[in-house]
Amino acid sequence: MFTKTHYYLIKIEYLGYRFHGWQKQPNLKTLQFMIDRTLNYVLEGRSFKTLGAGRTDAMVSAQGAFFELFLKDQPLDDIEAFLEEFNRNLPQDIRAISIKQVKKEFNVIQDVTEKEYLYLFAHGDKFHPFCAPIMTTILDSLDIEIMKKGATLFQGHHDFRSYCYRVNKNADFQREIKLSEISVNNQFRANFFPEKTFLFKVVGKGFGRNQIRLMMGALIDLGKHKITLNHISESLKPDNTVVMDYIAPASGLILNRIEFD
Image (tube, rainbow, N blue to C red; front, side, top):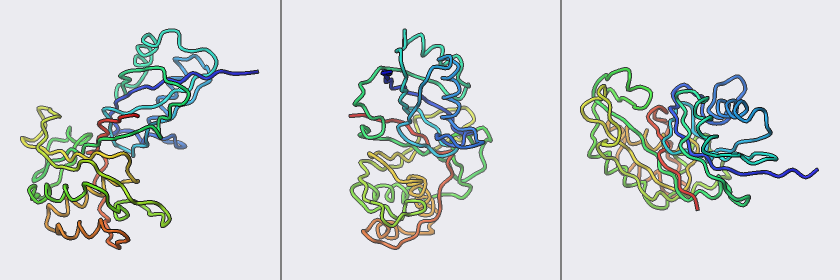
């Protein structure tokens, strides 16, 4: 018997601190697990599956993530009513922002044209524990000015093999970074934040596993004067053998925006 599938694109935001990343994993609390469990309740057992636009790591948060809902047989009667009911049953640290029906040809992974990540950090002291879920604290003082220079080195087409975790030798490490910059944080505010905090912003079509956290780790080492600007430049050359092994903590990373074709 022929079964029709209906396709919906759902935008979500979440605090990733208590989750083991996006993808379902045995015996672990993941975002996809919680979303699918909620959908199973709201849809009253109807047949469906979900596919995320990307896999965030454990403890990584998002303001503009997406997943596609593939719903069998009957379409949703009222998508706004569904969105309200979905949010009513999701845990407090996950919120669905919008929903729209898309065509069968839409591909939530391949149709991504741009992703923007933010890394929120502060340095030079031990700050309020409430910062921990969304901000990385570096106890040492950092040279922010040299870190700003280092961040710009990542812009453009480069070989990012030194910034990919558990490298597959046959993988393609060529990536284009459209924007890479460090600035004072004026986007996120809380009365328990330190007086001055910073954002590392990275924009590109796609990234390797732990790539942004390894880039941030290199910038932290640069800010501590453990490495030089030349060291980062060398690490981006084709077939380089530079090893970058400091992966910055996940909790400071936020998936801020995804654009589709």
